[in-house]
Amino acid sequence: MSDVHDDDVDDDEVDDANRVVGGLSRSVLTYLAKQIVEDEESVVVETEERRNSVILRLHVAPSDMGRVIGRRGRVAQAIRSVVRAAGAKEGVEATVDIVD
Image (cartoon, rainbow, N blue to C red; front, top):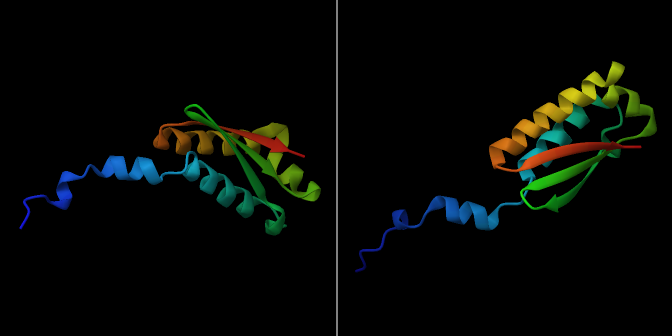
């Protein structure tokens, strides 16, 4: 019998190896966008990874663009704030671009 236990493996090492950079941020953005728009099928999030950061590009139907941006860009700013917080939880800087 061996004295090696599963507890000897650092869980952070395992999570880091299998983790998708910006995965939580992307999930949060996708969820928020689908809750706001009328055409959920048109929501597409593209991801571009960089060193310790991720750029998320949000595509929605042209008819839903106003809903996502909001008056004076308030909805867009709220989305960016929440996604940035999700990125901070992952240890990455997440930015959101809303693409038409």
